[in-house]
Image 1 (cartoon, rainbow, N blue to C red):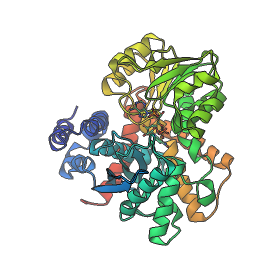
Image 2 (image 1 turned 120 degrees about the vertical axis):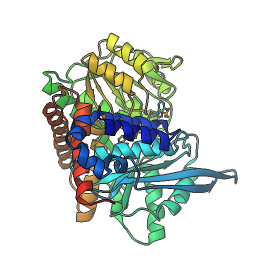
Image 3 (image 1 turned 45 degrees about the vertical axis):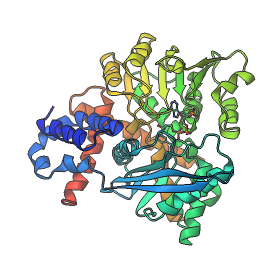
Length: 450
Ligand code: NDP
């Protein structure tokens, strides 16, 4: 490892004490780009390139007051991190979840820089959200919260400035309320200011499916490059939200058998293969819990999370797709998965696997599809949504889906080629980080010290 990288990582630890997730993300990226940095060390040092790349261009934090259904005023904290705009307007989702804090926002925005660079579109890296918990809130409470959140956020975004989208807790309903408030304040139908919009007011076909479908397209490329396929594989998926549902749909379409899905309480295990229509009914229509699945399919089993390893990861699977949240898989869990015969793991969520677990997978020959490459399909189709908004035109589902498939194949090729160029074998994590970093570094160097 280069001394320059170690110094920068140490500086990040000192300057961002207490921001564990952000430090973890920086450590993972910088640790894996050492071969490139070593080649250009003197230049990068002189230009302070790594010091600049780990410092957000802007971190915005704001008060979000709103009134609940009982007339009680509540206050949440809102964030927008505009991390790096060197290749395009900041772009990244909004997360509404009680765990949201500055560290999580910065880690997600930092990851987003590299992910967005891999898509091939001109979009910079950003992320935002709030510690607001949408669970158990009425529709009116959600609307009032979104309106208050946007009243502040609108000062900082725009279709050529910063373009938010959804993430955990922010789906089509929330994007609708956010867009409505933006339009009201600006008196301007600026369709490209948010992505993930409803189809009737500027959304793109296949955006809802994009992250999950893209993940499986990436997995197919990775498996195929190693003489394998999704056909007849037993798959488990953590989560049962947007990414998980459409990863399941595409995996099933590719001939895989998905036997388990989860939420933060536990998982359902259906040996006959998950019935996705039921999951969609529970999650997309009723906004219920995954345990309700067994009310529809009595042969299925519900397994509550009551051990350090989430129940979904104790089930035997060839392919695992973590699609819930960060740091879901640690070394202990990785050992269980490998002992159960894991062949490949594809990160649908952001940073679901910690560093020790990744190292364990790579040492044990598990094919590992890293989040910033494998889940880039969502933001890629968001970029296609922006293109359609600019053209005032929309493509068919098949047209967008075809483009998505090609984009994911290109992303895999970029990660694979970079890994091969630097003699890293099938370490697609390092390959993806290197391919993305080179692009960002070139743009930053070209634009001078800013
Ligand atoms: P959703 O809100 O639609 O679903 C989230 C799912 O993850 C739910 O099943 C939720 O269960 C579960 N979950 C959330 N927090 C935890 C937790 N702490 N422990 C266990 N399970 C948890 O979100 P998305 O599907 O949109 O996002 C899932 C992941 O994918 C996130 O990491 C996100 O950053 C990433 N991602 C999303 C993209 C998108 O286009 N939506 C694009 C790229 C990445 P519960 O209901 O119990 O909370």
